Length: 406
Image 1 (cartoon, rainbow, N blue to C red):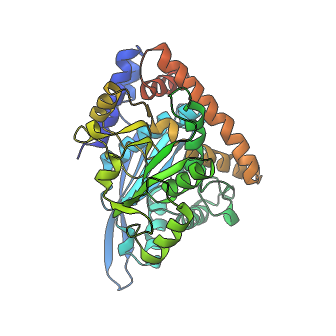
Image 2 (image 1 turned 60 degrees about the horizontal axis):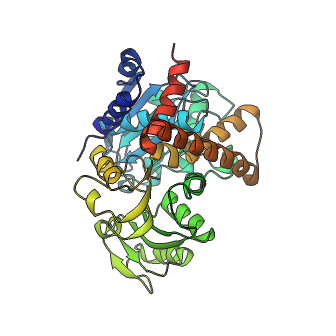
Image 3 (image 1 turned 135 degrees about the vertical axis):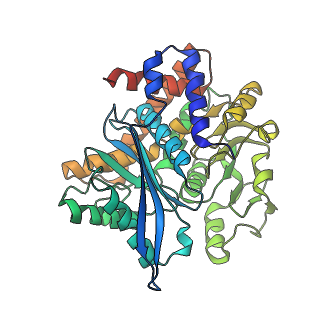
């Protein structure tokens, strides 16, 4: 598998060739400000002690406190976390929010742990890192396999250790403990606002046939939002496989089916397909909404979408990017497409610090113009430099970061 951090640096190199940001500035962006690895001892339910490896990468805080999720996955390792922290720095700058980029993680399969073991592990992560966290220093959030409940445990542990009463150190919390309305669907909704702002410019039809890889929080919400807005989701998958119906899938029924059967395959009036087949399905919009590196030089040539909307982080390798660019398939990059999540996380942080509580309607009314504004500015940067949207997004972000770099 490609090293995600090497992919991220390859993206930086490409942008540095288009616009001269100066050698010193680019050199500073090649390494994070801080890269912390911790061991977390956890007393297991059977009385044994197990040591887990955890991480926090604080990449760049020129624009504000480090911001970024915590990932629990058995494949999580430091290069992945560094790449995600770098992309968060770009993403926050693209979204125009006053925050920098960070990311965290633990190498663990959470399904192997009981709820009490998971809670002890989560609190252990905070105990080891409390000194570098804080509402004006570093503000974590959920990511793959972390939930609002885990954020509540972490926020509670941080409050116990530090006495902080703002609740603003962790975002993505449940509503009852300071979470923001609208946070759940924010990534999918933000992605839709971006898509809608760019649709005509990219030559896409008014009603699109959509294919989505991923049926977690982001993929499901995106499927529901696109369907409600008149588009047709013709194929969707989870890690085990997917389903296809040329006339469109009933997403609500499909979600209910998965709850009872733990799989998407076998759903009524649909054909079972593999994840590989899904990525090659002919459609108007392909939405990778799961993991990084799913479209590579090995399968990019078979992509039959008219456009790609990246709701996952880093789903295309740099080689795949070039192949799609040559095929004239525009890619709406992750640092723009999925920045709705971090934008609403910023709203939660802002509400916590001010002691306010915004209704979901107010949250969405604030989110929409920010996503549309970022889309317009990135499109303008891409046209200005005769390049793709990813490089346009990076140019906009790097300009903003450089302006605040001391």
